[in-house]
Amino acid sequence: MQNQSFSMNAIHPPTRAGFRSRLLSLATLLAVSSAPLLQAQSLISSSDFFNPDFTVAPVGGTSNVVVNVTGSSASSSLGAGDVTWTHTATGLVQTRTLGLVNIEAASYASTIGDSLVFGRSLDATVLGTDLFGVIPTLTSDVAGASAAGAWSSTATVSNLNLSQGVLYSVTFDVTVGSDVLNLGLFETANFTLLNGGTPIENVNSDLTLNLLGLLSLGGSPEPVEFQFYAPAGLGDLGFRFETETAANASLLGGLTDSDPQFIMEVSNFSIAPVPEPSSLILATLGVIAILRRRRPCGV
Image (tube, rainbow, N blue to C red; front, side, top):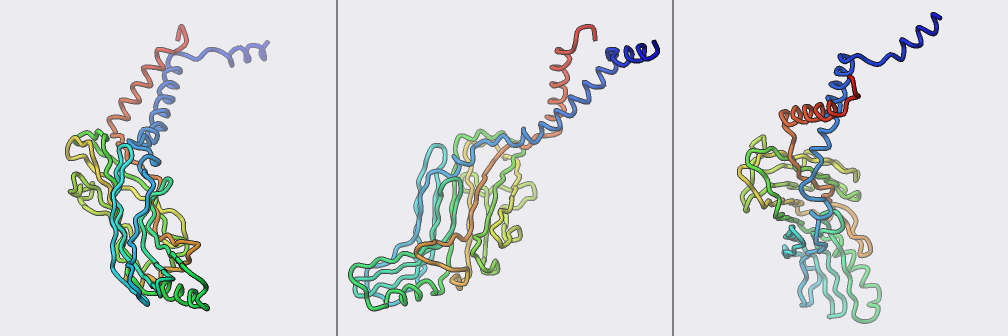
């Protein structure tokens, strides 16, 4: 009988106080665990942000040159949905011989797939027959020539509906190309948030976020976060990414016509409101109210 009495006590229903204690613990746990989910609700998807797919690169001239190193620049804008991108790429090395061979190494900026890519490409065009081994030599001269490179891309996003005074977080990943040899060749690598072309201050009152101190070689992505308070009710925002290398950009790494070199890649973009502590408290009280309405009868 003692064993039976013990077994019955063990399955006795919980008291009202015990249920409330468990209810409060569960509600607190749900509220805390839901905070990252609230923050992760991006106002625009990463795949939509990096649209449309297009590439901008400077193009060489048509006159015969041996090796021509220029600061040629190309810029173009294109939009899709709520996003308009403006790409600018600077840096060109060209050799053009007898009107038959044209070889160009150029900087390029591109939105492709779910990312923004800054890189260099090599293009060889041959209109004729083999020039007795001259082509490999010219290709090597162009690929190894020293030329500055500069990249700048700005995305303008509309229909965001940001509220004045609310704290927002911009996050993205930055990856340095796996074949880049030396981070010291970067003069700048910046991110700037814009409102109508004017930089918005973040919570630390910095207008531009310097990415150089956050980057590392090896091809692994570095997560970046930029927080700011909306100075007014905003529908449009601009996001500018820019990079510039020193004059000896040829030392960045290898370059072949079959394998373009990417210098830097931006991916996994998100902009979302940051939940304030008061919001979490309200969420906790809401969960408690819902669970109380669903509590067992007689408890």
